[in-house]
Length: 428
Image 1 (cartoon, rainbow, N blue to C red):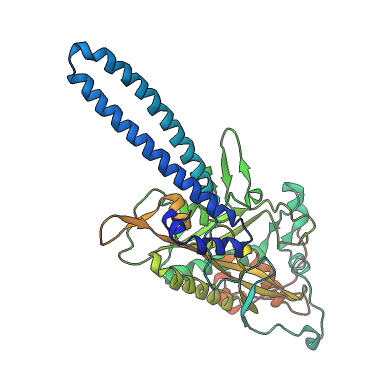
Image 2: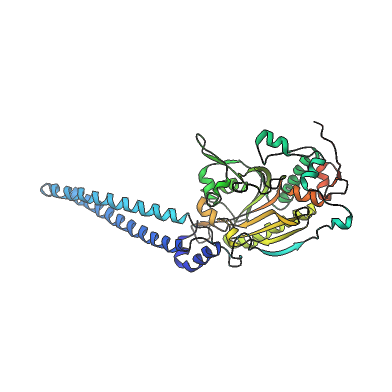
């Protein structure tokens, strides 16, 4: 949610943000009109209420012969007050509905446009030349099957399409990667947190996930009426809803470990092979609460954390500055790290880090105290530190001609010292 005072004073900035996102510019003027109507109707109601209270005192002190006439006036005034209150309630409801439609105001430097209008910031590492090495690379699913580690067939039998089993060394590799991410996070002052994966509707709405991408979310309706999260960001944001938190000693940083669920609505025919686009996966997500003025510096910190992790798993990748129309409603700026996938000949997203400024905090009523007295909303940020999809890039970039897979050096201590995952036959 945006600050209405900011919209009043900087309508041109908000309109430009809406334009860059490809969203309604007219929403700004519509909201300002609703805001004025709300304020006018509230003033009319408050003035009428003041008259009603004054009349009540007048009736109490009036001579008996005047009370009947004054009581009649009081009844008329009460009816007017009820009308004014109804008008004020309706105007407030309209205003509130419009305010919840706004996406966050994008940062000035964020590119305009949609999904394909990103800007490449940096490329790190060099993709392997498999032809020079004398063999054709296998895709991650063939590699995973070859080491008896990925079973899509039985996943579909048990749960349907886009589900899977991870087994043996590949399951251990996922656990190793996630544990390594937690260790890195804790070494950088993050609090390890396992989070609920079911949340209330108001928490899901507060984080901004029930807007354009609501169809991606699994919803459990009656009698529960709750949502399965697609990221622990949702639970970590909701954890401090309606609280005043203390940031006097620096940001409050969490590393959330959770299973995540996404319907992948509208993705029919896309990435149907393997574990790139699936309904359930595991993830370690960074989530931080910071002072408003510190959010951009914190954003750079989270991106550096992601780069450190990607260096440990030894995959070539690039950083892109996501265009405004592809940010999602909560983010003012987002950077993605995309790893090179050899068999696809292109980069695929592994991480995102978003600066949500005060947008989520306003919706969830998360504040801090300020020196001059009172409170103000905090800023929130998030970033992926490891997730199941990373296995795709690791397997393909670390493969050998015989179908074996090298374990990145940094991950070996987490896998009992194993250096290579050898091809093996299925036991059943």
